[in-house]
Length: 104
Image 1 (tube, helix red, strand yellow):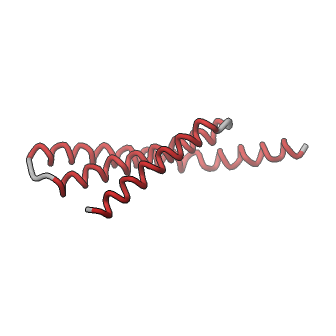
Image 2 (cartoon, rainbow, N blue to C red; image 1 turned 120 degrees about the vertical axis):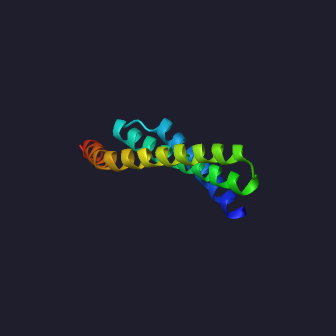
Image 3 (cartoon, one colour; image 1 turned 30 degrees about the vertical axis):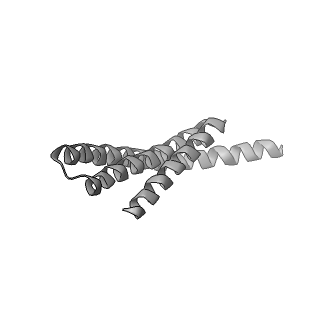
């Protein structure tokens, strides 16, 4: 499925992008927020990879491995989203405080 491959590559690209931003960031709450985003992107990548395997092969082993990938990816995406949503207000407050400190 070409559209699944597109979304798999896109989610992997977002994962790499957010990990690079995570390494370059110096503010702790922003790092936690970016870590949540990267976990969300990695979870989507793994889940979509599992879904893609269902279309490629037709064996019992494939169904078991794909189910594991989908469950692990979904759980990782869910935890990453919750982490991101939890840390966003703190990251915003941290950025505002850093901006005020830079003005003074």
